[in-house]
Amino acid sequence: MATLLRGEVPAILQPAGTTQYQGAYCPPGVPFKEVRRGPFDGKQDIAVRPDADGELPRHMTFGNGAVVYEYDGRDKQQRAVYRYAPRLSPSHQGVMDGVAEVYAEHKLKKEGQ
Image 1: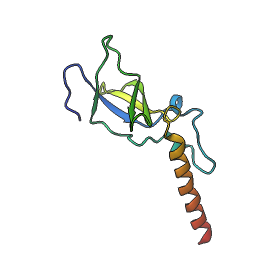
Image 2 (image 1 turned 30 degrees about the horizontal axis):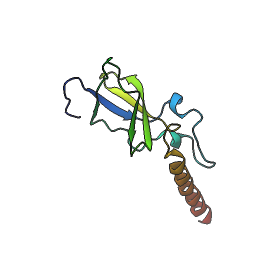
Image 3 (image 1 turned 30 degrees about the vertical axis):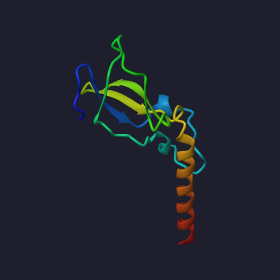
Image 4 (image 1 turned 180 degrees about the horizontal axis):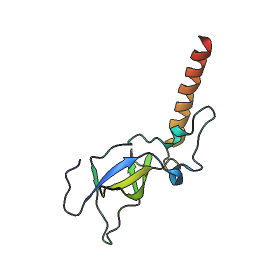
């Protein structure tokens, strides 16, 4: 867990929920469960600082804005929960195309056995 400075709130990154992944890009041959997965899911050694109004940031970005996580409330431990937002992440389509290639290669190898 992150060392918290005054006013900071612990946060955790989670896979996308229905709100975040509905309508997100999913290439043919890729199970839709793959769309939910973000590259930083499970990371919990982070903290966020509320703004002057006490509100937490609506989005958290990584990789110069390529990956976006969206605020989704607090969990039982009062951590701020941020969920992967594939529709808002510019890198999502490229990642999904790469995942589709892996699934296609696996399928070809399986058929060739």
